[in-house]
Length: 388
Ligand SMILES: Nc1nc2[nH]cnc2c(=O)[nH]1
View (cartoon, helix red, strand yellow):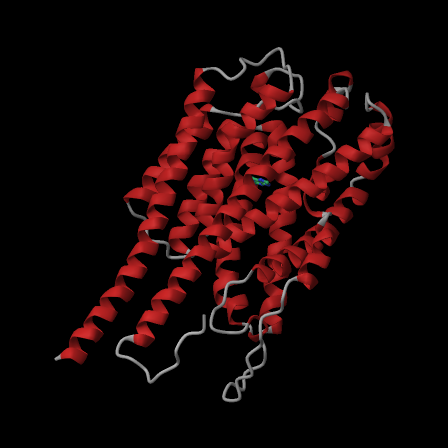
C-alpha cells in the first residue's frame, strides 16, 4: 500500500528519523553478530588446524632447534589468503561518492597509503612474533597481557570511556583466559624452565604490543582516515567494503614482508622436509596449509569488522573470549593424553567468557537504547512546542 504524501505533519520528520534509526540499529546488531561469529569460527578453525598440523608434523622426532622453526611459514599463512576477498570486494555495492565542490583538499590518498603500510608492518610483526610466542610463552600469559595493553591503548589513543560494564567484562575475560589455554600440540618438548628466559619475555612483550597497537591504530584509521574518504560516501559511513579494503591492502603488505622473511631465513627450504614428514601425506599437508590460510582470513575480517563497528577493545574481548570455546573443540577433536580434558577449570572459564560477552553486549544495548531515547525525547519536545 502506498503512503499518502500530504503536506508535512508536525513531527513527521522526526518520526521518519526514528524509523530510520531503528532500521540502522537493527542492521548494526546483525552485522555485529555476524562479525562475532566470524571471529569465533576463525579462532576455532585456526586452532583445530594448527593442532592437526603439529600432530601430523611429527615434531617430537625433530631436534630441539627444529621444533622452534617454521614461524615465518605460520606468519605467512596468517596473511597470504587475502586474494579470496578481492572478488567479494568488487561484488559488494559501491556506496555513492560525494562530490564536495567546496572542499579543495586533495583526497587523502597519502594518508590512506601510509595507514595501510604502517598497519601492514605491524601485522607482519605480530604474526611472526605470535607464532614464536605460541612456542615459547604459552597462552595463559600472552593473552591476558594483550588485553591489558589493548585497554591502555584504547584509553590513550582512542579515548575510549571505560564504564562499569566494560571493566567487568575485561575482568571476566582476563580470568577466563588465564585459567583456560586451549591444548596446543606445537609446544616444543623440553623442560619448562627454558621457556621463561629473557628471550621468552621479549617474545611475550613485542607481539602483544604490536597486536594491541594495531587494533587501536586500525580503529583510529577507520575513524580519522577511511570514514572521511569520499569513496565511502562521506558522512562518516561505516561499510563492509571498508573492512575488505583494509584487510586486502594490509595483508598484501604483511604478506610481502613475511615472504621476504621466509626466503631470507632459509625457512623456505624446510617446507619440502615438512611435507615429507607429514604423517597423512603431502595432500593433507597442502590442505591443512590452505585451510589455515583461509581460516585466518575469516578471523581477520571478523576482527576488523568489530573494530569498525564497535572498537578495538571489543574486538580483542571477543577474540579472547573465544579461547574456552576453542579449548572445548580441541578436547572434542583430539585425544591429547597429557590434557585434563574439559575439567572444572575450563568449564569455569567458558562461563567467564559468556559473562564477559554478556556484560559487553549489555553495555552496547544500553548505548543503542540511549540513542533511541534521545531521539524520542526530541520528538516529544517538538510535538509539545508545536501544540503550545
Ligand atoms: N600477537 C597476537 N597475534 C595474533 N594473531 C592472531 N591472534 C593473535 C593474538 O591474539 N595476538
